[in-house]
Image 1: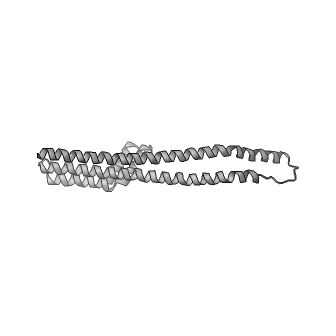
Image 2: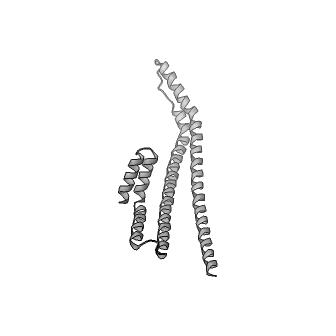
Image 3: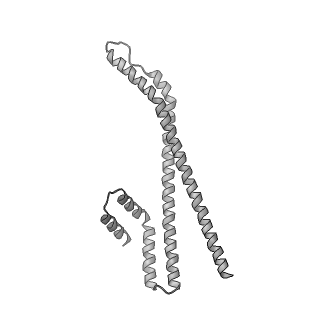
Length: 183
């Protein structure tokens, strides 16, 4: 009976983890879709305004080529027609910036949660090893301290990893930086 209860508990924990991961993934996908839609809207407005920009260019060329022309260079009518689109583009740019900020924060939160989960898994594994008398208290403390350092310095380690992924630093520099952070 005890084995059945343990199996049920593990299955419930796995199910909760899957549901949690699914809701996070669904939220991230929704945010990405909304961001893509905003960028499409902006692109459509930009294409729509291209003809108006071209009209301004044509009028300017005509004005310059007729330098003896006494009337001033006037494109106010085109600018007036463009104003609602320019305002909409500014609004969409603000929404895009907000969405990108939300996505970045969501990704950072997901990565922090992953780091926390890795720490907890490592701790659980070490606790189990300690229970079975597979490792000594000193080994347990040293390994747990190292895992805690990885969690505490998560942001620094993430930045170093990004530097390596972007080819800003070499593998040797990456390893040295990680080593110095974890000491």
